Image 1: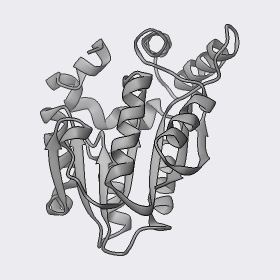
Image 2: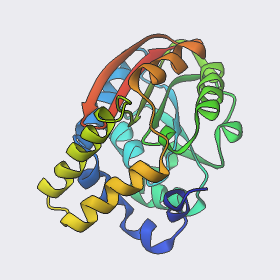
Image 3: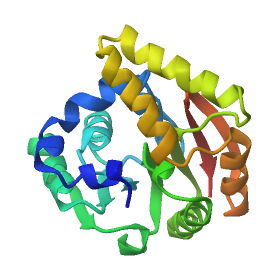
Length: 227
């Protein structure tokens, strides 16, 4: 477990979490709204949706507000973050079931759609392949799987350039320069960033079709693919 992952069980970090993604992820709220649209292209009005990395509940709230008939299974390894998700959802919480753990702790489905936002950069290539395969197995044929996370071209100059741009975005958004630099260092040293072509290949290897880029926010990218 990295220091960043351990933070998700820290009470002070959890208490401040809902402020973070909007400041640290370019176009965060628009990315969530686009995710809901992509899911809805294939999902029924009464869809059951699997949300991996559901702690905090921000995407759950966006999806639930956009589609009143949807119900959700949210999976996250942090009990504290799942508790926060329940509070974030408020009166919408009865439409979500929470499961503490990882993909193996998710219900079997079958689901009408699935998401994994800002999560896969915490795990290595082998685990990403396994997660993608397990999600694919739980989806109805043709259902959408939407992912978004850190993903940047590799190379000695290209990836550092994109991460520097990300740090500059944080500073331009009002993050203190020292904090912006620390965020860049944490991302560089503690997260597992793949090149976009590798991310797409993992989806194909797991049996998903048509992996299509729908979101780019400096060093973040998002795809939709179909079971």
